[in-house]
Image (tube, rainbow, N blue to C red; front, side, top):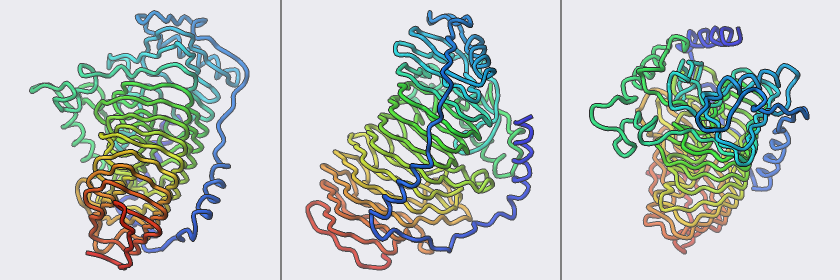
Length: 477
C-alpha cells in the first residue's frame, strides 16, 4: 500500500513535468560575509541532525535459525529476526561473529541491525535472491534489483557495529556488467549498455517508474545500502567492501548520520557515500578508498531530479579521509534538483589516484542551482587533475542551464598538486559566481588556472605555486 501510494505520487509528478520551470534560477542567494558566519550556520544545521536511538532489546539472528558457516543462506532467518524486533517496537538485531551468507536485507522501523566484531555479512551473487523494488539507479527511478540493504518509507533504522559488509562483487560477478574489460567483461558478454539507455529514454518520456521494469537480463547492478523515502538513519562503525555499485545512497531521506565507517573498493562506480535528494545529512570520521567518487552529493538526474524538486540540502562532511577516487568531495553529476548548504571541514586527502579535491559536475540536461558550498581546513598531499573543478558540461547538453554560485574555500593546503589548481568550464550566460579562496596554499599545480566564465572570483592571502594570487576581473573569457 505504501509503495502504491508513492507510485501514484510519482505518476502525478511525471504528468506535470512538461510545465516544469527552474524556479528561482535568477534569484541571488546571500553569500557569507565571513567563515565565522558559515560555521555558525553549520553548527545550527548540525543540531537538527540527531541519530536515532533504540530500545534495549536484543534479537540474535542465530535464535531464528541463522548459521555463520559461510554456506547457509540466511535471508529468511534475518527477516524473521527483523520482523520480531519490529513487532515489539524495536531494538537491536545482533549478528554474532561468523560468516553469514544472505540475500538482500529489508530494514524495518525502529530496528538497529548490529554486525558484531568478527561478523561478516556476505551478500549473494545469485540474482534470483534479489526481488525487484522501487529504487533509484544513477539518479533515475525504476523497478530493479533490491539494494543489499533496503528500506522503503521506514523510520528509525540503523546498520551499526564493527563487523564487515561484503557486497561480494568482483571481476566475475556484478562488476563485468559495467562492460569494461578492466573489470572482467569480455567481448560478446552481456553488459548494462542497452538497459541504461532504455532507462534514459523512459525517464525522458516520463514513463511511470513502476513500468520501468529491469532486473534479470538487463544487467543494472544493485547498490549496497539504499533506504528510499525514510527518516532518521544511522550507519556507524561498519567496514564495507566490494559493493556491486554505489555503497551508501539514501534517496529522498531526512536526518541521516554516517559515522566511523570504512569504505574500500576499486570496482566500477563504487562510490562511497552518495546521498540523493536528502536533507540534514552528517558524514563524519569516515574513510573512503573508492573506484569512483568518495562522497558525491546528488539530487536526481534530469526529468526525475527536476520532477521531485527536492534539492540536496544541509549536508555536513567532517573529519573524513579520502584516498583513491575520482573526487574527494563531489556535487553531482545527478544533481537536477539542485544542492544548497554543503559544508566540509577538517578533512584529509591524498593519492596519485585521487583526481579532484572539490568536484562540482553538472550539465544543461540537469539544470538546477548549486549554491552555498563551504570548505575549511582541508589538507591534501597530492591529487591528479584539479583541486577545485566546476564543470557545467559534464555528459550531454540540454535546455536547462545550471547555476553554480557561492563557494567559499578556506585553509586548503596542497603539498603536491596535479594538472590544475582551479578549473572552471561554465556557460557565458551562467558563469560560476562568487568563488572565494581564503588562506589557501596550492603547490605543484602545472597550470594554476584554467577558466572560461566566472564572476567574482576572489583570492585572499592565497598562494598557488608560492605566488600570491589576485584576480579582480568580474568575468573572464
